[in-house]
Length: 141
Image (cartoon, rainbow, N blue to C red; front, side, top):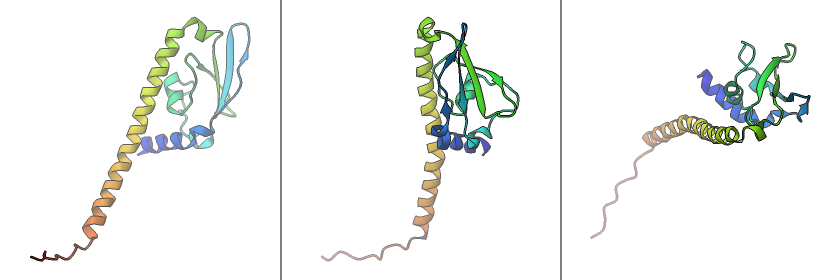
């Protein structure tokens, strides 16, 4: 039940996630991502997250970003970095990740649709069992 609520919250609020512009030093490019509190409540409490964990919270970025720091006063602000010119250096990873992300997104949407369809079919069944049958009218010869 909790997993379903998490998925629902992510789908409902992922369009409220804010992404900063990128900023750079000699080695890395950086950005920060601000999660809405409805999603931030699902943050794991173990510190840094993997790319997969970030994506499960609705964070959508190109490949290669690493969650590299937690700022304790504001854990809903995620700090990311990746090697400068990462996409130019590893274009095959970018294409592979894009395909995987699209497949996972379809799977998540299907998981959420299935319970709704089941609930709707149960409603339809209960409504039909309460309905009065139409009176039988014989055909005229």
